[in-house]
Length: 496
Picture 1 (cartoon, rainbow, N blue to C red):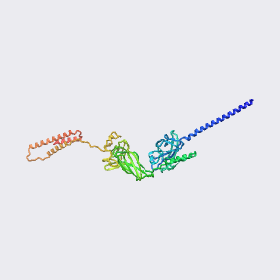
Picture 2 (cartoon, one colour; picture 1 turned 180 degrees about the vertical axis):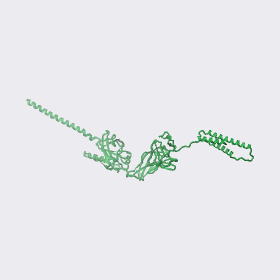
Picture 3 (cartoon, helix red, strand yellow; picture 1 turned 135 degrees about the horizontal axis):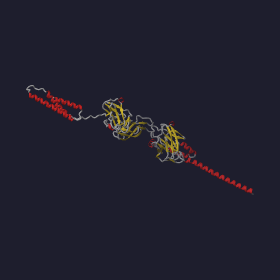
Picture 4 (cartoon, helix red, strand yellow; picture 1 turned 135 degrees about the vertical axis):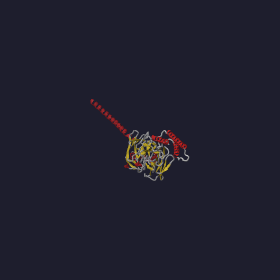
């Protein structure tokens, strides 16, 4: 009986253990499944934004015309408003210009340097467009897309050896690599191969086919156009000619030397020519427009020209050389200005400038100018620059003129007006001389006549001495030599 009871307890214990192990196994299985699911499911539903196409070297000039296309390769929509383009070790923000910031699965968006120029190149583009500040290297670099948490979604490295180097093509994704292709902004064709294959494996080929059909409808035909480069913003000097020149490139990206270029200078004035000279008569900031035309194609570039007054002085040095002084607060471009001295001219070469508040001295050996004579500073068009008699003491680098410097023009010193006295003196002297040297008639000569003649001579002498004294009193600033001369003249008259 005891043995039977013991066997019954052992049997019950074994059943309990079997049940416990079964329950534990089931719980363990559920736990492991949960862990695996939590690790796997986020991958399938998380955003997966990839770089899909890179236009790094646009045909012709690529200034402000570069762009990048991204694609949502994930299975759920994603908002890329907070995403960043990582380029040149810098995170560049994205600003929505056209469309929403949400990308559906398989949808693409274009990130452009200058959206306005992108739409000029691709006028049929109707997709999602973002603005960002970047500049793609024509030799190659590594790009990245970061999400709002600053985590990398994708990176892509390209090089000029991969193609699309200024030949009108772009680099498009093909699986895990990029290949040269015909540009297709707004479509998923560049990255559809890897995306569609994975979806076909999951039985969603029909959905991908519909997506591709919609995307193909957005394919834009690139516009072939010319381009113009006019040099950008610049400083000019009022009254001084500046050279405005432009380079025009045709639809094949080659220089067109005979293209027509019309300039509008923002003040109602125009010029025509690939390279023209122009000067502003009044200070100000002017919007300049350069429009090029080659056949049926046109291109325009705008920039700002700032005209400021010329504050310049031409100065003669004691050794015969000349100095040109820039009294202004900005560097002064004196390209093709001239210095004229007694008909001999020296012209400054292009790209010559004087630093603000500084001056340059012109060696005679360099200029070939004479060491003497009146000199003038002329603008390139031959008109005289700012007057050389501008006060030297106002020059910014010298409160007082250095002793070794001499101004170009020295005004004559005014002399005291003593003209009436010398004339009176001359009259008296003439009368005395005439009286002394006049021959006396011997006919009827008497002692009374001689006395009369002698008295007249003494009176004239006294009158001359008085005139000389008056001259000395009226000339307070007279030099010692002049006083000595007057004393000698007085003595001579007294001898008479």
